[in-house]
Amino acid sequence: MSRIITQTPEPFLLPGTGVRWHDHAERLLTYAEPVSRVGLYVSLAIIYAWFGGMKFTDYEAQGLVPLVENSPLLSWFYALFSVRGFAAFLGFLELSIGLLIALRLASPVFSVAGGFLSAGLFVTTLSFMFSTPGVVVPELGVPAISVAPGQFLLKDIGLFAASFWVFVDSLKAAIRK
Image (tube, rainbow, N blue to C red):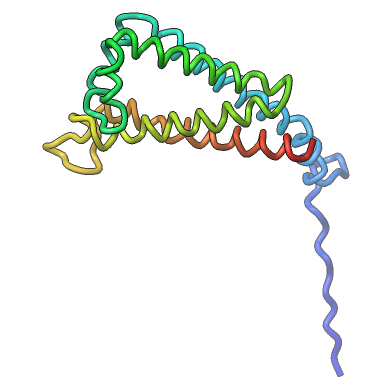
């Protein structure tokens, strides 16, 4: 009867240290994960502060017109508000969402609301991909999209994902509190 001897391979060691790479990676994650979490919350809050603040300018208000007036979801707002009035309303909403996300430092309950509202806002802006003329480059056809408004709106997929992550992360923290 023959015996097969198997040898367990040595874990990958960092040269000259005798320390497994896995241990270094775990130590790095202890610092990197909270830093990346804070970075995501802060970056979304900054984006909302910037975008929200710009909504109070005529430049930004006029830039919204082709998006809003062609949207089945939002076009009715122009019957209630002027172009500048709607932009100011949206600016207030965006500044409020940014503040709710930033208030994660005080309580995750605030950022649950902020993440949820933010995700909803980006679902709405992504709907503009289907209602705004000029998103698709006609001579190239789908999936070719224009720089503006196509690529400008496409970035909202990533912002939606970040917003939804903030919602889930904050909800998890609020529930486990």
